[in-house]
Image (cartoon, rainbow, N blue to C red; front, side):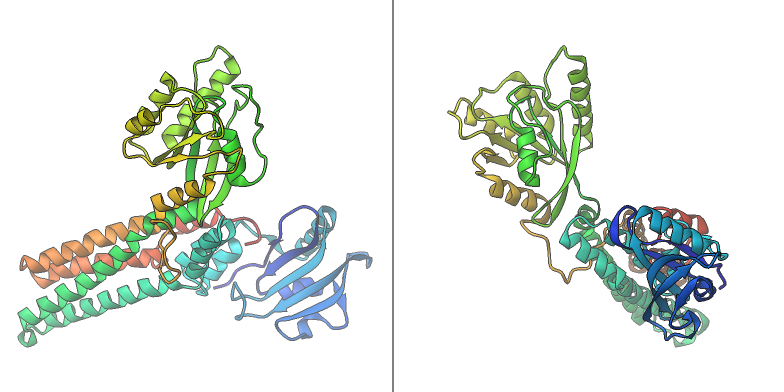
Length: 457
């Protein structure tokens, strides 16, 4: 498979100590060699070496001092020749070096094109390629660990094992159809039932991790709601351990949505501090309140904050009624103040929802709150590193369909249907699992997946 040579900046734009321009393709070494001046020509150096020198422009003037890594195919990420030019990390410097490289007949890479080439050249499968973007976007150590396991092929190997079992079943069915005189029907049906149930059980194990995997990948949309001045912004700042929201004693200070990521015991929360929900004549504040109500409807987790030092109001009661059927935690803040709230009424209105008392000001109860958040979604802690998580929505959908079709195969066996009809469902399951790792997927899907990547990856 032949591709033209591509280049892109592989490091974040802006000022930094070092920037890297990545070049990949059959002409990568030759293209950079035209503008490189060092002790040796890049075409003569050993693979996987880094070489000091300068880049020279078309007028023979020195453009930059660089270190150039040369990696020859096939032992590279893309399985093509790869050159990485390490230059000084400044906006002007990077632009000049990239422009000089592109002037050598090299094309600017599209988003994710390096990883796409790694997939198309057979170095990684599609599930590993998709995990690369998860690795880049990981918000917690555990999310990074899950993504890294998938990049290294942990999910791919399990899918491959399942597909091999199904392939052996299909081969057995073909033999029984071609040579019926050698078939013992009872033995064949027992084999089909046992193997199909095993495959279904393994798919079920994967799907059991889907909720947690998706949380680790995307984070929990967590909305902090409550009346004005109950301590929502203070709670946000406490969980973030830095001041992101303005905190005053004046009700209605927060008028817009403030969104930040925080790691709570391995659980990534996309924390949203909302405007206090109350009736108001202030036009700007009213818009903020409407946004708060809108965000409440989209939340995976709701943190409803009440004030220990104030009596319950109708707005508190209404919010308790709204969040009662949701994944929500009722938080009574400001326990450092004299008690005015009726805790018995709060417990009655909260029903089965977890109830936590805290004082953000005195930094009391925050650890208990974090424990409750973790227990809601991970039974107190994230599960073992050995577990293979499935976190990608596309993978989950395909696995759900595969679980259904293998179930239909098991049902067909138990109902005594002809084995060639059973074979149809087994083959369909095999195909669906193949789509997880990129076997027989459309070009449009491939383009859509890699369009989500950043340039240079």
